[in-house]
Image (cartoon, rainbow, N blue to C red):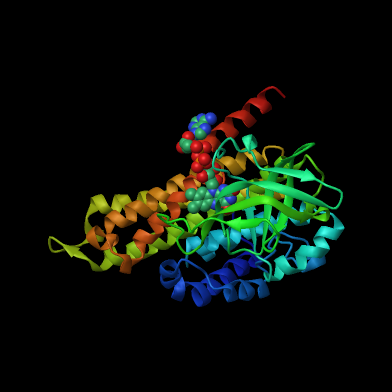
Length: 378
Ligand SMILES: Cc1cc2nc3c(=O)[nH]c(=O)nc-3n(C[C@H](O)[C@H](O)[C@H](O)COP(=O)(O)OP(=O)(O)OC[C@H]3O[C@@H](n4cnc5c(N)ncnc54)[C@H](O)[C@@H]3O)c2cc1C
């Protein structure tokens, strides 16, 4: 793998950076206090091909590689990690439809998800099953003309806001993935969760009470839903890690500028050698995280047999390192880092959840160990 970006990759990064600066940065703070993101933003980003970054061109997708995705999410997160991460979940869903869906399902959804007139959420977690996701209780019963679904999905990013939901549920033949549209009879939503970070994007429970869904909304093959959900998470984990990287890099850029101005004991902060060493360590940590993340994305693009292990390692490592970087940046700002006006405390709050969702960082270690043992036993 060549660690230097090609001209095309540089252009992809610059495009996303420009979109973030123009359409997201100026509003990030007010969207956080309003606890929602205006839907026009998605349509704008859809016009630039960000609704189907990795979906095939047949239905208007951008058909980019995973290395491109991590560039896009790193760049967008420099504007707001919460907004960028929401887009990453939508992209995980559109990729699942593109990869596993029937032609009919692709025709029904992909054009709309690619242009982002249809926004999608991913529903795996339940009140009684998070890390042990396969222990889910949500059930779908197949009747002559429809599925009837009953159960509750918790912590759903975009719950009550998105247009359609990919719901993992138990069926006769094992866990399946079924797409539930927002107007399905029997579908309702819980109250808005009051969260530490990611406040711009709404999180609610998705509740199904004999919820009626057309038979054609089954994604792929019955009983394969858990495999689809986990495959989606490989790419999702890369993108979430990229969101941590962009947020941390932005906090670091601001910190360097601040330390060049702020004085204590008659010297600029960046004249103290102990703080210069902190800066050197942060720069090293970010470079290592970035290169490892791009390497994991390349592994996925190449379809390497150890791609799942690399996605889990990258998610665990990058989200841990970048949260620490953001927290260090807050410390280096002193009391000002704690004030909302400086933007650093928001990044610390937004990045914290990346260590928890799409598989906690403890679960990432379980995945790495499991994959390693598989390799050893041949
Ligand atoms: C803001 C936010 C948005 C989210 N968005 C979504 C979404 O859109 N869709 C969705 O499906 N889910 C979503 N989630 C849910 C998220 O994926 C889960 O919270 C996460 O998987 C952990 O599950 P849990 O909260 O039930 O924790 P638990 O599984 O109860 O874990 C509690 C603690 O125990 C640890 N633990 C559990 N099992 C083990 C083990 N075997 N060995 C070692 N440690 C273990 C965990 O790492 C954790 O530290 C979101 C969560 C948040 C906070």
